[in-house]
Amino acid sequence: MSAVRRMLSTLVVLAGFSAAAQSQPQPPGSPQARPPVDPQVRTLRVEGTGEVKAQPDEAFIDVAVETSAPNAKAAGEENAKRMEKVLGALTSAGIAKRDLQTRNYNVYPEYTPSPPQGGEPKLKGYRVSNLVSVHVTDLSKVGGLLDKALAAGANRVDSVRFGLSRQEAVQGEALRQAVVRARKSADVLAAALNVKLGAVLDASTVTEAPRLYPATFAMDMAESRAAPTTPIQPEEQTVQAKVTLIFAIQ
Image (cartoon, rainbow, N blue to C red; front, side, top):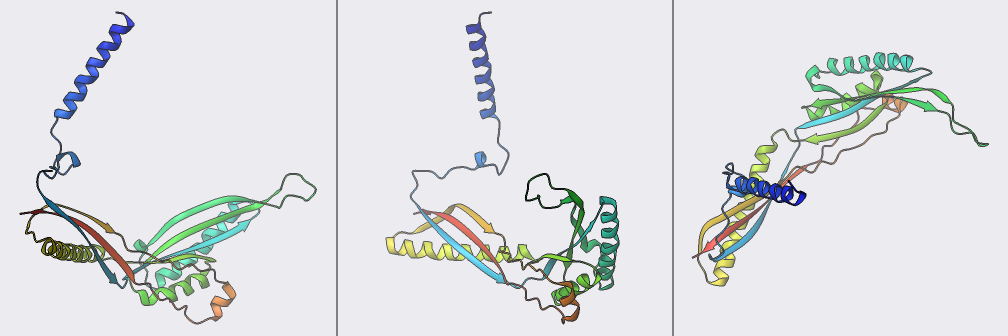
């Protein structure tokens, strides 16, 4: 078979596959299965936004232990001892083991600065970092847990993040508000245009997750031992939803 005939045969096969794919039924809910709005129908398109503010009811504290030693084994063993004390202090304070999760564990070499006269920096040892995330449901304990972790041997607090365990309910309320506002806008526009609204032909929405504002810390160990309980004020969470409605005009 010549090269031209082989090319024509390939194109015919590909065209057959394409036609077969287009004729396959689309699964329910897929964009292809969604019937478009009839362009012959007069429509009115409106948008609405809903916003709900809620106090957070959970927190995530990221605390870490960093250790250095001439070799990786010694740095790792020292890190393990100190982290065990930190975890023990947290569980003694009422944190369940299921609410403690290792987020990051790193071992990396440390070098001396490059000599001014040139040359390669020399290996001076290894640093081990173990980062644990603590899930807290009683926000009044966040400051005290930070203090206990630092006193037990943690030497880094990366962040305190607040969240909503009831996020779906808050998002649902934001969406309800968005629909109500969109409907009011449609009523105002219809009255101004002297037309009557029909059924909703299409609806789409976008729900935004809560805006989290994590607080970061860099505490000195000596100061944290002498200081009173660290005050922590959780940020109010904001959830937004946007909806687009398309009404038929009777």
